[in-house]
View (cartoon, rainbow over the protein chains, first blue to last red):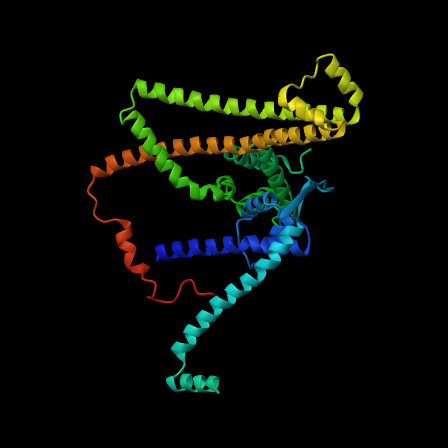
Amino acid sequence: MDYLNAERERRVTQLRKGILELAIMGSLYRQQHYGYSLVRVLTGDGSLSLKEGTVYPILTRLDKEGLVRSEWVESDQGPPRKYYSLTANGRRIFESLMPEFDQLVSLVKQSRNGAKSRQDQPLGERILVKKEERE
Amino acid sequence: MSHYPEVVEKIVQDYLQRVGIQLQRFPNSDQEDVLKELSSHIFESYCAGTNSEPVGRILEVLRKLGEPADVVAEKLQESLLSLRKLKKVPLSVLGGIVVGMFGLPLGFAGVAVLLGASGAVLGLVAAFFATATLLLVTGVMGMGLGLLRMLNPDLWDQLVAQGFIQVHGRVGQFFDLLSPAAQGGLLVFIFMAVAAAGLGMLWLSKRILRGLRFFFDLMLDRARTLLKKRRRDGSVANTNRVSTPVRDISPDREPLSGPDPYAIR
């Protein structure tokens, strides 16, 4: 079972990493953020649990790719903050990625529901639904 | 000026120092940037913390941030992402070349050849930089001359008369056909291309150097892994193996047994 748990953890981490970039772009699409405020947004409602340090390499890469721009702003309360915002190119790419993401999610949900319904529904019901669909 | 109590400051500095050690293979500017940003994060997170005990609070902040090695490993992973596809091919090709050239027992002669090859690589890098700089300087000077021809033809004529500028042969004949402004424009255009080539080489050099560094690091890592593996194989050969962990857990790997562990809820 330990193997299963480890395998599950690995896959969950992969899944999270995959959508983290999109989630970061989504947060920056609405408003600019500095690193910590971005982490708060991403983890705020507990929907995305992650090691907070994971965010920075992605931000650096997006910055280098020109999808995000950054600037250091002095802060009254402590060390300067590095603010990130989405560039025009970043916005375009995010907008083009969102339908793809939605499609993927619905595909996964659909295949799961489809499999479930085939298993659970009685044969007669399945035939009836098919008949209705034909009509 | 410190933003923390003394003991917390020490913990933070220790953490940043450990991150700094992990960051050594990155350019200095990147290192400073990462450390500055992590400092900012740690401070913000510390201020937002609810634990009234300062040490407990900072430890919680650092735990959430991740171990220095993990934080940097993520960064390394990101920076190597584009190189990942290239990683395997050059290694095997280079391994073949090294084995082919030096044979397996690397004696003193082999080491001498390796040193020679490293020297040659260094020479190539130096020549590359010299060429890039030369192109850039020539380009800028040429553009200056072109501008001079366009904006101050009299001074140009004086320099030609005094022999400072000499244009001979077919190029000279071709230039005589053009007006001073056209001559200047042509010069600026040609030398702009030369300067651009120099700049392009310098831009490329950063990537080449990073690639070389990465390559040497990789070779060292690979050599270390090989040594470790050999040692381990040697020690394993002397012990009686009953079963491997993989065999023990293989039945659990059946994807259709039990509830789906990856189901989306």
